[in-house]
Image (cartoon, rainbow, N blue to C red; front, side, top):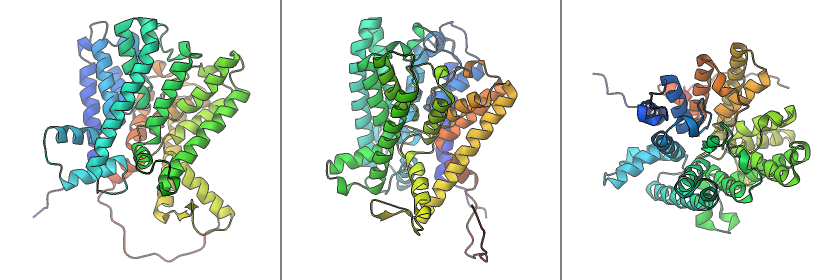
Length: 441
């Protein structure tokens, strides 16, 4: 008798994301979702829904001028679900409806948000929901104080809420196309309130719920922080400060001093999966494009609204290389040794993301006849779920859009999650093969 096959946690997660994506696609295809009153093409609706659920921000139609108020509201809901995580959102709805959360569902929740343990997972979920609401509403109030003066009361309030949610969820969708299509926040390049608020929202969402829970629990007692929290905070600070200095010294020289300072800071923050921009990326030098690509591939922290291969992956690989240079046996941080399985996972994740990024860019370059560096910028933006662009996405063919859809999905769900879902039936062997020396380097 065959046993009933049960889906693994990775399989449930990827199917959950696809269910939300397809629902969003159907809603965006309704005539009421477009300002023209006509149904959006399936390809446009699918690309936009994937970009919203995967909190990327790449678009083939300008959000403000193509989608109606209903369509924009659908996008906002998709961004919120994608940012919090499909599993988290489903658990919250179930708990609100009074359903009992089973042990299996708690385990799925732990896997979805990369929690360290099963105990206290519902309490952590409550913290995520309450914290998300508090931060997004605060951001909406602050942004509305600027947007209401620019666009009127009701539109200003809507714009404040939309951009606050989009920033916290690291989505990068904007409604500034009413001024100039695909312009993002370039008209607010020198506005300190908009710049600072959006940057704080991006960083808050990108650092991760687990990090903020640790900070809330231990406050200023830094020694009690988990190793992961310390790694996330230190690596994130490094990836914010160093690129900002590079941008300030070598890029945006055509801007006024104040705009150049804000531009350097903002682009250093937004490149880590947010998707907004206050400058034209076509003005970047090749070195500046290279820095942006590295930041986009890195992404945010585990258990956050951000995508990418995660700052912890980069930190583990750098620490492992340093351990090799020093002829040390183990990778370690802050007086703690990193598990060997973690190092192997980091190597696998880095390899997967580099392969997806490079071969995706190479394919688009061949299909579209565009410069490879420009295409690599788009694929890094897609697989890192960033959403910044050099302006080629709306003009791409259906094949190239399909490549970006696949990359956005892999970047949000996690390339390793997809591999585990596909190979869920495989099992390791207890036997070990003979060992032989292999020279590298």
